[in-house]
Amino acid sequence: MTRAMTRLATALLLASAFSAPAALACINDREVELSEHEFRSRYGEQERGQAREEPIELGLAPVGALGALAIAGALYLAGRRRPA
Amino acid sequence: MSASNDRWRPVERRPGLELPSRPARVVLVSFATVTFAALGLLIGGALGPKEVLDLPRPHTIPLVSGGTSLRIAMIHDVLHERYVVHGPAWYRERERRAREAIAREDEAAPTDRLLDLYDDLSAALDRQHRSGEAVEVQRRKLALVERLHGPRPTGPELPPARERGDASRSDAQRYYLEADEQPRAKARFEAMATRTLSPAERAWYRTCANLGTMLIHASFQDAWRGDAAARARFEEGLRWVRHSIELNPLAHFGREVWQAEAVGFFLAALDDASLLTRYDLIGQPLDARSEEVELEELAGSKLRFRGPWRAYQGHRETLEAWAGGTLDEAGRRAAMSIVWDFRSHALRRVGVAPGWAAATRSELEGPAPYDEPVLGILGMWMLGGGPNPHFALALGGVCERINQRHVAWTAYARAIEMAERLWPEASVHERLVAHCRARQTALEELLGEPHDALQARHEAELAFGRRFQEERQRFEAEQLQAGADMDAPDFFAGFDRAFEAQHGPIASPLGDADRAQVRGRKPRGVDLASMSLAAGGLGALLALAVRSRRRG
Image (cartoon, rainbow over all chains, first blue to last red):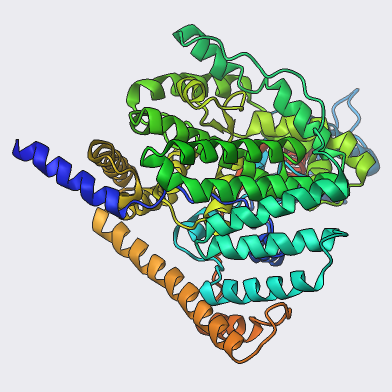
């Protein structure tokens, strides 16, 4: 009984506070386009200004550098004048 | 003789074995280098580490060319009231100016300018919570529209909607698995992507949308109390909103579509309040059993839609031009199917569960790409009736499904804060609050952050948003009192500059939530070159070693 009374009281309280479940508006006036534009521009401008710089990642570059050194060394040794 | 001296001893040439000359040695090493380098290129191309692309997430490609596309920061900001909203002084002044301007017009010979003034007047009344008067203004306008533009146009011809099947589990699974097959939605998208509204369609669209919305606002409270006449007006409002969708379905980032669905949901809830404890406003199931079917759908969609990023890379220029609104009509026509397919396959679909769709008599054919209901809700929240617990609940559900856990947590927090407006029936209200709390607890575990820390951060952000709105409304009231022109483009410039200088931009930074690091198909150029050089170096050393062995 107490629980039922509590529920009833809560329901009455909520009913008095309740205005509408969703004041849903798709109102078209002179301001709607402007408001939409204003809202999206706050994010669009940020995005344009936010340059995406590629992070520098060496990846396999050190291996490639070793390879280049090996080629240079091999060509040097191959092309070197041998002592008589 | 020492070993080191031996190394430089002249080689005794073996009979029949001529050592190559210096140029020949260089040619041999060079040949080996080039051959191995080419081999390295081939192997690197096939097996090398792939490039990592920094790409925008699919929700940045909007349904409407050049239209508003979602940013995750938008959800965060709307939940924290970080957006512009006018105060009562603004709408009192708008009403005064609209009435004055209408008085100067000749209603016997209506013009589109007069119709727009009627919209301004009724919108100002509605925002001052005088929706009944706003409806009367729109009804007067209805007669003027008919006189100026003739009877209401019917909008584009559309094919029949997809069949949803019955409530069986196999039908529900098929419903989810084939969610991208929505012929009516696709035809509507294609029709609207390539045409612009005629003056008659524009005038009728605005009238239908405004009249429908204002009828809904004016009648809901009484409809809920059981007033049959009010309920009839509420249903009439829904019919007008649906007429507006027929004429301009993609207007205001599809807001009317979701408004109609929300109204259908509340209408159904008036008859059966248990609907509110089973689904949210956009038809996402709240209970675990229904979510099980959704999860199966998600697993299926992962298998089927493996390559949205490939599609993005393949059509990058087209998709970016679509998003930027730089395509002409021919370009939009050519891009339509690319955009539709990309959005269908790349975006997680949410809402419009079969049971919800049947109960609410939904006009949607199936679950929608998540950005569509989210943008609809954000639009209704910001430009409509303001914060609402049902909107917050639905945003929480979507954000959980797209792994935006902090935003989801905040959405549930807002739903709890506004709980007194969830529904007047205590049992419904209690269950919805319990659901939000349970979801928050689950999210706290996933985030590894304590409730109190999240709550404190949320409250600080909300206080910041509210302070922005209050201070801006105070500024506009003072300016209007001082006789400033509300339509002057720099009306708010002083306030916005000062606020930003003191607190930074009201919009949150975008961060990385709208971008994804995706492994591409090609190796990075530098890795490919490195593998080729390494292989070339190996070839050169091998050639040298072979020559040394011959010499030895």
